[in-house]
Length: 299
Image (cartoon, rainbow, N blue to C red; front, side):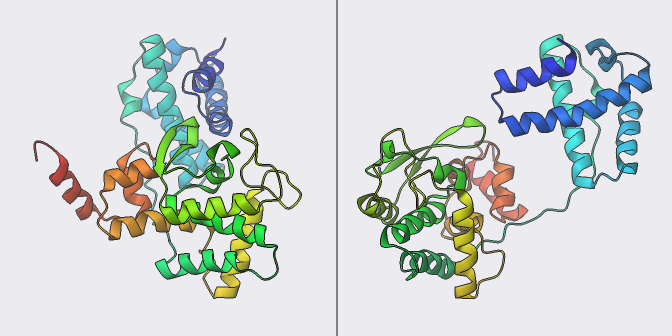
């Protein structure tokens, strides 16, 4: 097996990364390996990769920039290359300090734009009382939006729930990105919304079948919820940033504003690192330092 194939097999089989994530790595590194075949005049074996200099990597990045790649794409490409080298270190004991110290372009920090507490409540209430929909569909939509705002779930996580999650538990087992499982507490309002929907749904909610159903009984398509929120924000006069994901943003920011611990929010959201949660919740650096100073045993 060649080096690239072995690396992507590692991502799929051992790291169990999502198929789209593995494909992104494969796409980035296929271009890198194609460049190296010309640049080195040979197949980029692990040994050849170990002998690369920082200027070799920069030459590829410069070429890709000339091709029109954005700063974000260049940064992702460099991240893929560094991931490859971390694997080379583990799998082949090949280390390259020059590559490890390479830095990509700095990307501007994009803070999330959550909806307000009032807007979140209005979206759920409006979904629950939509006169154009059947009562069970209103209950379904209110339950889904309640999970996004009341439990911080991604829309894909909410729609992956099954009938086995009934009646709604106090602690919900959620499978998130990369297959990682976390436990999320459900407040009474969210549990009541889910159980109310289940009591009205005209379709049999089996343990192995989707919990949330479309009008014809199949698994609910996320585009239905996205279209619903688009419609409701027009009714309520909310900005275009009021999306289903903005309810997850709101879950985190409103917890933080109420004094919740940043580490706890990280766990609830299913983030691998605290830095992701810091950006996601719009926390400034001083707040992060306060959390660190309060929590670290040597602080």
